[in-house]
Length: 208
Image (cartoon, rainbow, N blue to C red; front, side, top):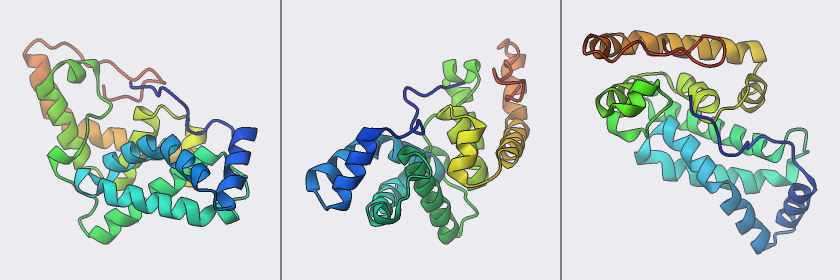
């Protein structure tokens, strides 16, 4: 399970409040600071949901929404939570407009959260990426937020604007679909002596 280096949904502090106020005043340096602070995380999230071909376009759209929306941002959620919510919504809207049922090419996704065997074995890793590409965009979103970014269900629910129970249910369904898609690949790896695929470390709901 991949865990994040930083928690984008940590509570906003006084520095965020000062940065937001400066952006609202139209200060260019503050706007550049906010952009550079979040650009890599936003791009990574968008990339894994919409694919490489459209990631740059959607990420730019996210920041357009961020700067347009700062005037009405009330601070009910942390700044990072709000930005991630805009990123997820923009990504899902883009996939829906694209009219491809959320499917992207196998080569458009970065490496996703996978069992240790998949991370060590490029062949199995490719199969994991191909399976991820077949998931509906909403399933990809919850897998990215929880299993790749390492966010809690409370944080995922805040970002996706749903109940905690809905977040857990969606993750369970997404993992179940991944198990179905990966079944033949994992069986083949085990037959070659790869051993059992370990369960997730958060309650046994992983890909095993």
